[in-house]
Length: 75
Figure (spheres, helix red, strand yellow):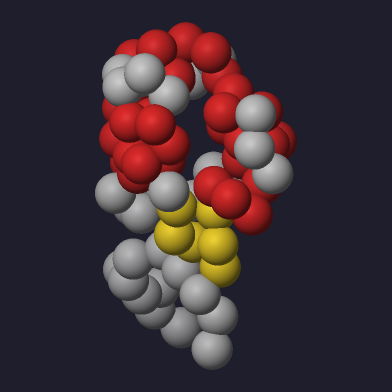
């Protein structure tokens, strides 16, 4: 079977949360959670679904529950 190149079914509110948190930059968030800015860009644009650990780290960085940051759009 060929792998499809569709967008991730995981959506997120990271951009809004960054804005709501004193307009935190992607770089600032990346440093807080220990990844590169490019990783944050890819997650925000739904081109990359984070690991469960990274998802929790991002939620913790904003002091919100995981479901306030990410949602899964299944069938």
